[in-house]
Amino acid sequence: MNKIPMTADGAIQLKEELHNLKSIERPKIVSAIKEAREKGDLKENAEYHAAREEQSFMEGRIKDIEAKLSKAHVIDIKAMPVSTKVIFGSTVLLINLDDGKKVTYKLVGEDEADLKIKKISITSPLARALIGKDQGDVIELKMPNGITEYEISKVKYE
Image 1: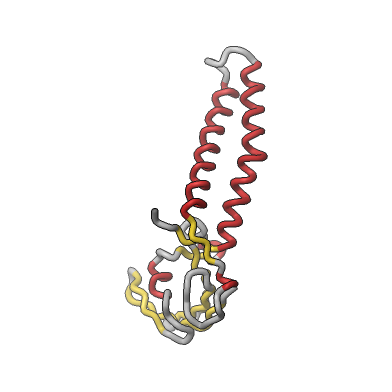
Image 2: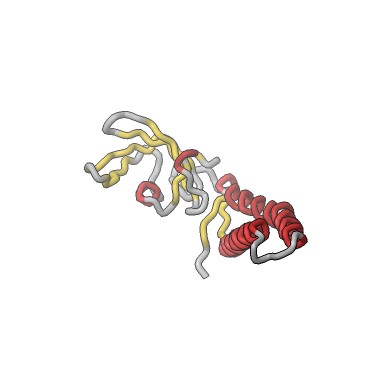
């Protein structure tokens, strides 16, 4: 079985979502199905069919989360010895050497990745280029419009 790398924060978020689905959302849907059943003919009962469909999606999500958690290899970056090397879970400040723009990314598992909050997947081309490099190193990233160089300005384990 292949382990899925996941940050400690990512595992906590999944566990919280799982708890919410099982203890709050599931009882709501069961109640909605019961109410819809009491209204009579199930063939033409749109509320019943909508509640059953919602239940199906929720149960699928529960199984998905449970599978991910069972395969998770949780890595707590805060427990790692502090270093300047880029590893899974580290936060990296990069300077684009072409235009001087600075950007910060946290390297996380695929399920945690969200570019809006500056979290990139460990499997992304940029993350793969960064892994194992050290603060001060320069990496080259092949982009559609050519090669872009980034300097690793700072590496944080937070």
